[in-house]
Length: 234
Image (tube, rainbow, N blue to C red):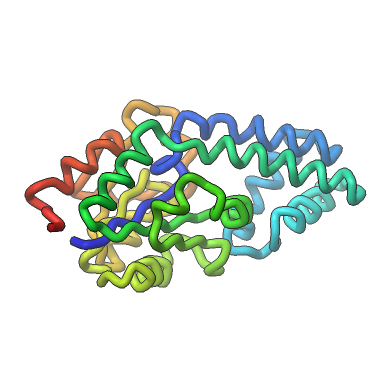
């Protein structure tokens, strides 16, 4: 096993901050002049299309959603909304406490590290400036690829960009978007991060996975032990 492909939200990010997503959307709605609940409903309803790039950039997305909600923001208002929305998205990218140390350790063990995220425009636009970018060899974003998990093309793309056969890749995620079943079908070895210390986080998963992988860890730090001597990469 020479590659490890990670989910992003709730896996590398702190599951505890996911509860702040609605608060972040509320701040954007206020700038756009849209009722918070209406904006939240529109963003939630548009999620399947937003994450495959159907709305375009963050600016284009917010303009389209505002219009769907009956608002007509001017350019200055839209500028402020984009800045507010990006600020909220940055908070939601806070690393979980052990995430960066795990990535750094795996790199010292010569693993190739990939990312496979169902995400909208905000993550893609900000990626080069995140603390994750220098640690991930091959990021794959649904927004850029035009399809979402568990589409097998995403797993194949991640492996190809790592230069590692899918059969030699672990896939590590918290279980949304049927990602583990997708990984299994693609030929990767899936690992579920249960987030046992964050019981509320599981309720926020989109399209939860009914497939339960053989390999399960409660927190990301346990991955080092799982990939230890019995799965030595060196």
